[in-house]
Length: 225
Ligand SMILES: [Zn+2]
Image 1: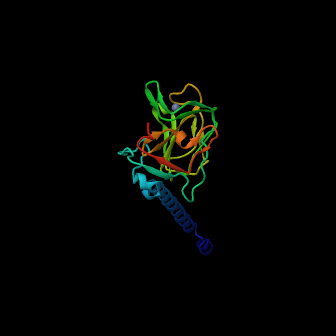
Image 2: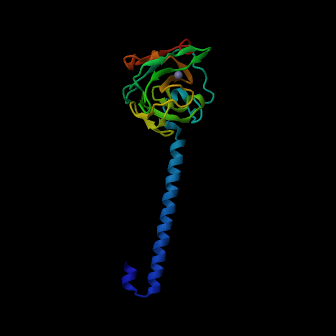
Image 3: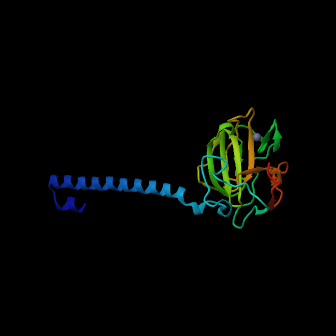
């Protein structure tokens, strides 16, 4: 404004406009660069990963089992609702179609809960999304690592509502129910794992009353499949 009022020559006005345009373009470039580096750093801050006392820096977005997870040996006592975290929320309260355990010569590593297409599937405990993608026979799948040390898995989803490395709270909507992957009817395949090893969700959850069975979970060598 100052240069326009002081100098009337069209040449000078043109020069002013060019400077303003150059500054505007430079500003755009800086703000784009800033956004990109911020996004990259949120993925790298390993100190943000939950339950580092059990997993250290082992964190990947590709597979249900993280690399080199040793099978848990000995007895663990987990406080399922650590201080500062929200109470358990049942992912979906539906009829149990299939239990954890031996099924057709293989181990069924979770429980199947009947739901309808796009029924809301909710996060069980506070944590961080470790996996969110189509995963073979599981179909659209979300894995959350929780502050209490457990990991929960939600599969056959019709839609996924969370992003990788996103912080989630108990009760947050993970996605909508479905039958993607190897499923003949809409249902939630729900798993609970510790250090990669699945165990019967009934050790933790009353599937009929849709509530937590205990605040302190004790796992030993016989707890897993
Ligand atoms: Zn299943």
